[in-house]
Image: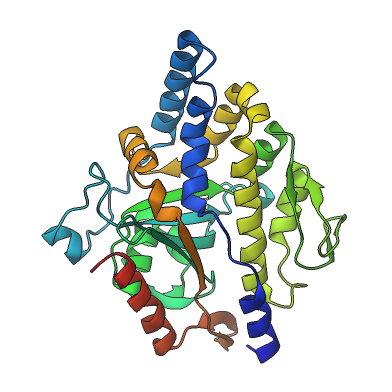
Length: 326
């Protein structure tokens, strides 16, 4: 990677809100925003949100517990234990695919309520690493294709030697339905480009329909930062979508929004976990740090991979272990 690309990445402003906080706001904010309307409405929204989270709930049954969790299990009830969440944007459904798909966007979020800090580590989809459960090295996003959520969590857990406590997967194809249900989203493109008949202008605030949002988040080959640039735009789409869902206008249309979410998101967070996190971990997002795991591209047997140097993995690993107080 050249010095200009590195400077470009480092010059980008840091996010003020963590992705996890926005996801929790989406699920619980619908209830909070209407608490003054009346008891029946509050109960109805609460019941609908709870029902939706139950549909979204899907345990990672084959996830291997990290050694640190065997010695000290995670407890979120007290709001004192740091924890991690793997957020994946999966490509199931893209181009009419009907198979498991791959996790083309991978972000590891850690929250520490004691230091009141949150970090978001972006993991390149082509990262060359051991796929836990398969016994060989491959692109990290193939772990999800080979073994679903559990294999993806185990692989990330092995890469950094830290526990991956929760996951949230978002079907990028179905994000189109959500974006349309909330009336579109607004983003500011970091570069100018055309994709699938859509034109995006650098620095120009742009309102996107669902189809345009999908096109905006897919382009990679014309981006001078390659997959790093696409990851950034995918984060923009996910965060803008969640923020829009939490607005009053979307709350008025909450039924269709919840229906879209139930078919687009999966998580191993229970409803009770989400309530505890929302009530007791909000201070953890007072300071948010964005970290990009970086390497260099190369071809092995004519297949492109991102090779992450050992010192880079150690740098991110040390940060994550400090965040999780390991």
